[in-house]
Image (cartoon, rainbow, N blue to C red; front, side, top):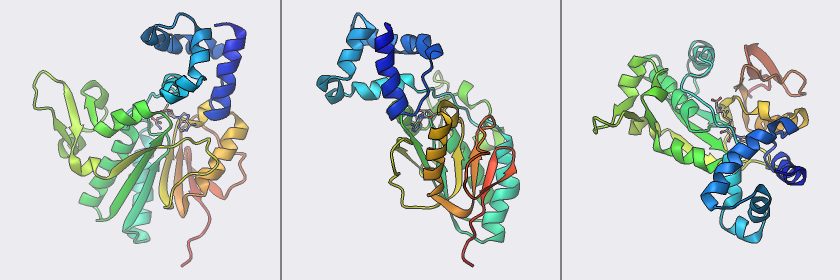
Length: 277
Ligand SMILES: C[S@@+](CC[C@H](N)C(=O)[O-])C[C@H]1O[C@@H](n2cnc3c(N)ncnc32)[C@H](O)[C@@H]1O
């Protein structure tokens, strides 16, 4: 890929997706776009670049293919498991039992293929079943339509579901009837709790009507530069319920933002804006 072509992709990706594209990511970009070149039988990155930003490219959805190719979608069930312990031991008892909220809104901000949202659904369902009844809805959003399609199915391989504790797997997952097919599917009652929608965190506002008591925004800020992180966090904050909780990835530091968020556990923040009582 020649330097001008790299600059064109870099500018588009940084401006529209917020994802940093330093020169060190050139090889990664080449590898990922290489798959599109082969699929479309386009001989060079330069011709692909012309195509993707052309009228036909836009009309044919190639921009979305570019977005799907450049996002990193690594995720897992029970990733950073301390967060789910904190949720069960501190957050849910406070929201559901102490404050008596019977309708909890949860948002998985960069949901990828859905494992985070389904983990939340299982953890919350289990709390509602064994400790204290309440209702909840989970919104899972991501910029990549390809990952959202996977998330929507709620189907995962045995390998992908290894981290789900057996008692939760038994309660909330169904094994495929086809014995040779090593997959499980989340039960309809769990899938019914989650709505997956496409949302670009770089948009100037988010079309969300609710305030969220629990927001998981993990492992997406690492791709953004500091000013972008700040702007995105301000927009996410607008949709946070007073005294709600924000979970960030463990490597994501939001120390220098000027928002009423108090660090209450490792990478967990509480909105200090008070509920009108
Ligand atoms: C590494 S995954 C994190 C998944 C999950 N939150 C976790 O921690 O396991 C990062 C996700 O952020 C999404 N993403 C990147 N830039 C985005 C943007 N501007 N708006 C919305 N989602 C974005 C990617 O598509 C990707 O699925």
